[in-house]
Amino acid sequence: MPTPDINAGLNEGFKFEDPTETKIPAPPADNPDPNNPAPEKIELTPTDPAKVTDPAKVSDPAKQSGPPIVNEEEILKNIFGEGHSFKSFNEVKAQRISERLTAAQQLEQEHVKTKSELDRVKGRVSLMESPQFLTATKFAHFTKETGIEDYGTFRKLETFDPTKLDDLQKVVLLEYVKYGDAGRSREDIMQGYRLGDYAEEEGDDGKKVEKESDKKALRREAMNAEKELNGFKSKIADFKPETADTSAEKAARQSQWKDAPDKMLPFFKTLDFPVKEVKGIKIDSSYQFTEEDKPEIKKLIQQEIESRDLPLTQESVEKVYESVMGTMLVRKQTKMFEIFGEKLWSAIDMSLKAKYSNYQGLGPLPERKLPPETKIPEGSKTADQLYEEQRKTHR
Image (cartoon, rainbow, N blue to C red):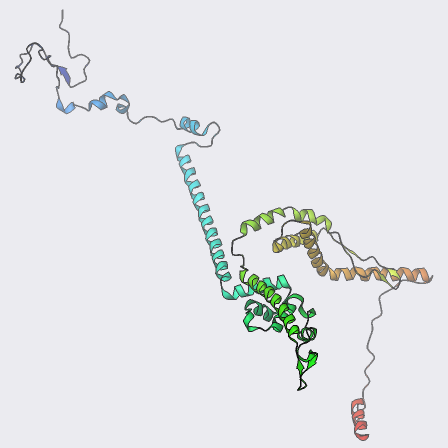
């Protein structure tokens, strides 16, 4: 019976040692245990050290056969599902790069837009914080609240100091602030309180003497006037122009008017001519808006909405309508007069036909020519020269 090969099945370069070969005993270990002898070691020794390979590589068949085969279509299908348009990883990569570039461009645009808006707000705030703008804005607000357009009066109220005005000046100032030119004048107030030249008593020297009771009555009114004038001063001082950015609020108001131009357009039908009758002849010469006018009207409506920046109310709609109608009335004025002239001519023509049986109709008017010039004989005097001679003669 042949001896079995103990190295069968081992990779090339490895073998079991032959047990029949004489072995040199290993030196005894320290304090050996005679009852538990160490088991005999089986060593794998390579027959050719040059052919020894990494056992990890030998045990991994995938690494022995090169890089793994990747099914790109299957992976793409698992990620994007059925019906995707990608054919390879490179297309996905290119798409991602394109998306990133687009996103970067959008961010850049947003950055530029935001910076521009920030600069605008900074400029607006800087302008509003200047003394000139504050004074002008306060004066505009004061005019709107009181109806007084006199800058001098505004400055008197803004710098009002009760200690620098007497009782009469306080009352006069309040009268002008509240009632304008319709208020009591200085003379009216003095006459009412019987002061100055309007006093009822005279002294020994013949001069007018004011009563203490009349002075006290003026003083009481001056005290009330002082309170009201201080109130005006406080309102002027407390008024602060709006510095907050209201672009969001404006956008919200504008969005309310989104469909307004289309809805308002059908209400623009005609422009009425003010003259309805001439010498008993009635003329209907109103201008009818045409399809060509509608784009122009719609554009005007949009401009009015943006410029007025009002909330959408019935009153606001009426203001926009009236303003656009007024603009169209001016723009179509020439055309309206042409229509009026044609209607008037036609009405006169019909009237004459009804009145005269042999009337042939109004034709074109004959051309009007100036009379031929008459030459003045040489040496003759003009009318002005004759008049001047006569005037000198009869002096």
